Length: 470
Ligand code: NAP
Image (cartoon, rainbow, N blue to C red; front, side, top):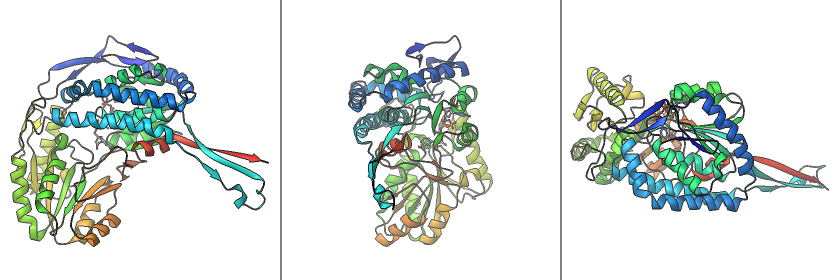
């Protein structure tokens, strides 16, 4: 496929191969963009901003709702693209497309609700004869940088609210999964989006990343990805708005008063969905001692039932990791934990890019698996005495995106809600639960700001005060 700059689909002699992560088969190529291409894309986006800020809201709504309709018509094609360039199974990919349609629909709906308020100027002595209000206006050119693991829906979470809010965009999708993003771009243009509003440059982050982030005409950088790149971007961005959706190693607490079967089912899914390449995936499971042995047995049995393999086969439950290099990294982390005394309860083996679903216990905290984000199919079980201990352990990391707790005791739930430092806590679900309209984001090293269309729109617009001196 080609990249989209200044209303044209552009090719380059230098190409990047897009490969199926299961077998390395080249499925397409995209141009290797350069910093000069990014500059041209920003030039166009400056004009695109003038176009979008002057579009009436009903036009933006029509474009977004039309795009959602076109996505429905291409549902299976988009699903196969996600499951071929990425490592999601075809079943998981279909779920992502359904969510992305919802994300674009919500963006169309929320475009109508970018509201202001009247300001009670007469609350200040001396200002009695003033009246006014504030409304929200778009901020300009936004650079959006996205990761590989939800190659369509996370792009929709950038483009939907950027367009709804009256801004323009320069998008850099992940190098390994650019096709889903380019197809969404194609769909938005087919839906009638004026072309200069949407610019997509494909290319390597370490080659073209700085050109997106440092240009002073870019008024906001919205980034979803790992903390390392996130911190690098913050250092370089200068005076512009920043939104950061970063990683985590989410904790889930399982108390002895819960529905054990439900907890096992939900946590196995939460640990291995998208091969654990999921920012809200379950990495640390704190299980109360009375039920620990039963939970461990059932959890391992359920994990071993998962069918691992080619992601496009209808009956595959878990596909390959995104690259063999990533699979090797996870294998190395597992070995490090085993050498430090960690016990493998199941899994641990790697073949090519496929890592078996892995369950461990007794993993020391100072191992990478014990405190960093694994972003792979590995979950660690811990036995805990009581809720206080579980909360203390859940918080004892540098991340804070999502957590989960299984309990039927309302006081236990409320204590966890109050004391676990995260952006979202799920009661009787694993950490892996999200709908696209809720505020989504983390505390500590998990990020800055919130996504979820209404909340992204707050970040992507600014209040302007209007005051009449009568
Ligand atoms: P990544 O390596 O940080 O890459 C994310 C994006 O940033 C890619 O497009 C990448 O380009 C680009 N990039 C890398 N270095 C850059 C730089 N110096 N300047 C500008 N752009 C740069 O992350 P990933 O491996 O794709 O995704 C996994 C991470 O994303 C995990 O940590 C996960 O938790 C996080 N994530 C967070 C959320 C959330 O909503 N909180 C959601 C999903 C994923 P290249 O592809 O060319 O390297």
